[in-house]
Length: 127
Image 1 (tube, rainbow, N blue to C red):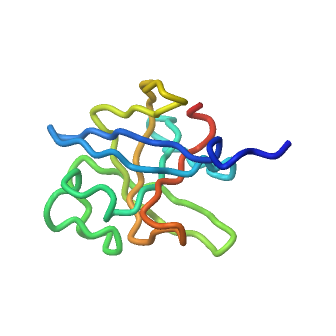
Image 2 (cartoon, helix red, strand yellow; image 1 turned 90 degrees about the vertical axis):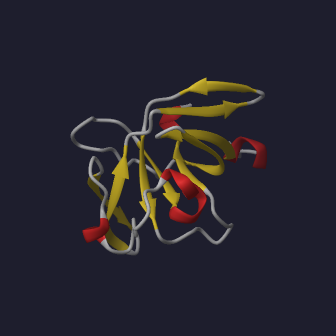
Image 3 (cartoon, rainbow, N blue to C red; image 1 turned 180 degrees about the vertical axis):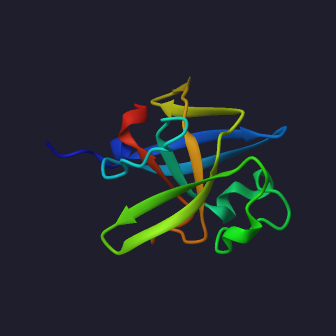
């Protein structure tokens, strides 16, 4: 079955350290990434979209800048593998239709954005 464009899009509200951002995302059935310590699914988000949720000096392209409390997760794609820093947000909500629902997931930070812009790659397991 084909999905409509509306079914492929998602909106996330992510909170960390008293700050909150809302990010558009794409539901990605190919995102099977999970964080091995918590066992939680992982939403991949471009650093630019996270804004003030990331501590000053945090550079996702340089793992040595990883903030305290963050973890590493290894992502494998068709283009190869990449290690990303990730964190557990204090709260995350996914907009399903008109309703916001709480979800539990880790957030992996990437320096790259998909061709469509600063969109999160949201695993469909969060639906």
